[in-house]
Image 1 (cartoon, rainbow, N blue to C red):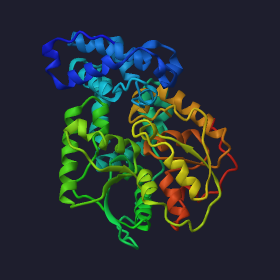
Image 2: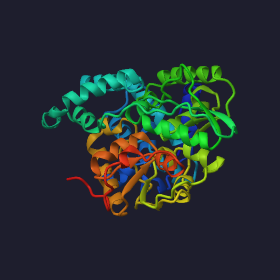
Image 3: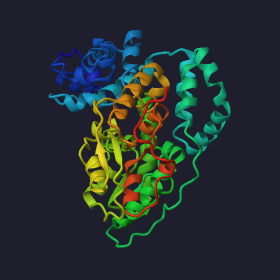
Image 4: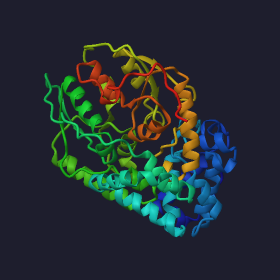
Length: 424
């Protein structure tokens, strides 16, 4: 795609990188077949190819973007399915992040939308604030139908996404039986509040793999939420704080994360702050280290949902289902596995209608597998899909921990259904 950036514009490194990404696009259209919003809406402007054209015009002209450009950029999930299918290697992730930052700097959103985005950026990256907000949200849950009817769909969506309260998980300081190395386990922000049992299971599994697990004092949010809200300065500050915390923790073999979205962000620190991070998703790390001996092959059918941040963002595709199969599970892969479930960070709050359509489509495909349990490697996917399915959703690491000697996941304590079914 041709560009017409001025020398002054290209003096800005972000603009130069975006211009290079735009020029790589050859308009082949391969990306349209795998783009969730194009599949749903059929609008060229809601495809990666169409958005690249809109972003080119916006960045070349500078200043406030056209309202239509804001609409179509906002509808992008940043699922990165387009990067998997693009034969030209367009760096769409960098391009869409730059576009979002430009929009936030030059576009005045309606006041309710501004307040919502500010609240999300202020609450979600901070576990203490999130716990308080979730407590208040549970008290307000009876108001969900009223909020839906009065047009406050983002607030209603937040109440629907609230998971059941969970007791803080134990087991985060397990010592390895045989010492092979030392890793930092990312504590995260949302997952540590919404699904603390995942970190506990990961710690036990890593110990069986022979790794000492340490938690870095002073570590915080990876910065992904701020980055995708168009607030790159906040994201950089979070990244630098994490790098300092990890440096104080001493030498480690890897920084392991149980949230695929966080892993994608950590692996992008080189672009964000110019420093590489030895980041590994927990499933990637265990696949390389070797699965510990299976103590009790469960033999139950598991539908594996591939999180976009894992299969597209990090290109980790075969390891998760193979690990589950090696652990004795009957792994079933839903149709349209490349399509996003609609979670996409805070997309399911900001774009409620599209996110719900994607969720229901994904839930139907999962139900069609006939499996009794769903495994998803990202807390956002787990939270998004849970209301649509009458079956437990767990992180794959919980199942691997169970199969290799750990406790049965609490979500599986209830009688297991014969198959999944979509809630009405």
